[in-house]
Length: 176
Image: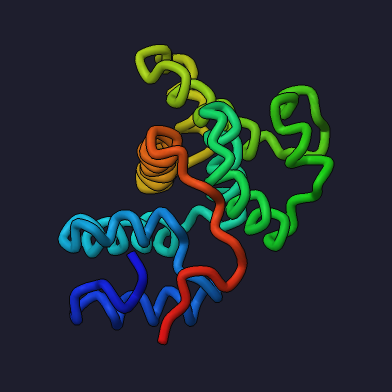
């Protein structure tokens, strides 16, 4: 939905998103067809990505890997760029499928990437051994953050793939 078509209470949210990103992403404009879903999803999105102690850079790395596994061009377009802006290299991001063999990821990062792969491909496959390894690198709260990031983007990936969402162009879906 264009800004001119949203309910008045969503205009401020559109303007805030535009001020932060320079556009209102197509996924958000689509969710705006159901204002309550859009409002609560934006609050959830902000809580998952901007709070806690796991770095935004690590969250973006596992978001990119999750989106690669789900083959989601929409999320890859924006989150690969965000990850790059947070310090991940093109080489790391383009070769993320081989993270386990790479020496430029820390053990902590590898544990998070392994979690992203396991949960995305089959959450039931998370073994006691893998969970113990996870606990040796992350606190309970950080495990929640990682799982919420992975879960949120599995949701977004499926939403965007099902709707064949086109990546948002810079400046698209602007505010007033």
